[in-house]
Amino acid sequence: MAGKSRPAVRLRVLRTQRLTPHMIRIVAGGPGLADFEPNGFADAYVKMLFPQEGVEYPQPFDMGVIRAEMPREQWPVMRTYTVRYYDANAGELALDFVHHGDQGLGGPWAAAARPGDELLLAGPGGAYAPGEEADWHLLAGDESALPAIAVALEAMPAGVPVRVFVEVADPAEEQPLVTKGDAQIQWLHRAAGHDLVSAVRALDFPGGTVQAFVHGEAGAVKELRRLLLDERGVAREMLSISGYWRRGRTDEEWRAEKAAERAAEEAGR
Figure 1 (tube, one colour):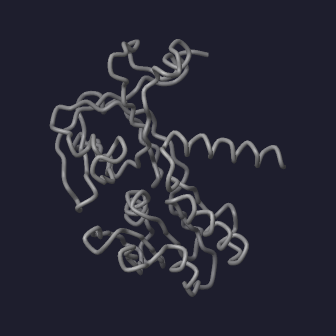
Figure 2 (figure 1 turned 60 degrees about the vertical axis):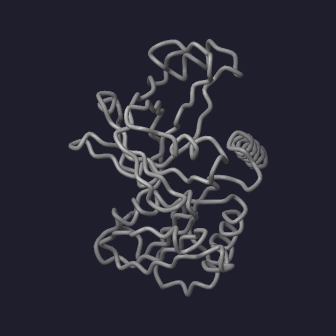
Figure 3 (figure 1 turned 180 degrees about the horizontal axis):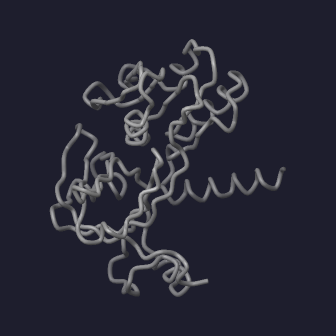
């Protein structure tokens, strides 16, 4: 039924920050931030909506109405980003964008963003937060998962063991990570031939129950899913694992592939 979804959250860019050569932080706010409802997940994500040039959209900007009333080719283009932080007192919401020159949509937008520019966001969604029932935690991912990994580390219970693997291009892409947990953080540099799957496979797993968050490129995630579930015996309910992107695919192509894979899995049950 049209109109069931919530209108988009309309924000303005407050400032931008180049965190590393390929990571840009956009801090946004404004009166529209009052419409944002945080959900408490470490992987809380929003869909950033990019209106198509020359298309008039109904107001308030509501994707439920747009999907019901407008042809698909006129729908806004969507990209998904983890909420790096939300600070109601400061009136700020931060999103981190991976930027590789003119490639993609979100990265070039973030590189060109200036204070006052508008953002339209739908969400948030999310499903993962560190739980106190785990004896230790595993966090693994690439640049696309780094914002969620950073939030998870900040939310870790004090003193809990955490093993962290982050795959980035080179040492210049490392970022400071803060946690009260007992964290061992390993940065993996693709320029030096390091990769996420090999690093997690080589890990000497501590004893006890592990809660794992593993996200990033779909090919690597598929291998890690098999490793953790089949070889390491990680309980499925203690594992948050998903491909954020797939090498050689646009975001739209990857979403369509994921939907088809989920449908095939459901049909096979």
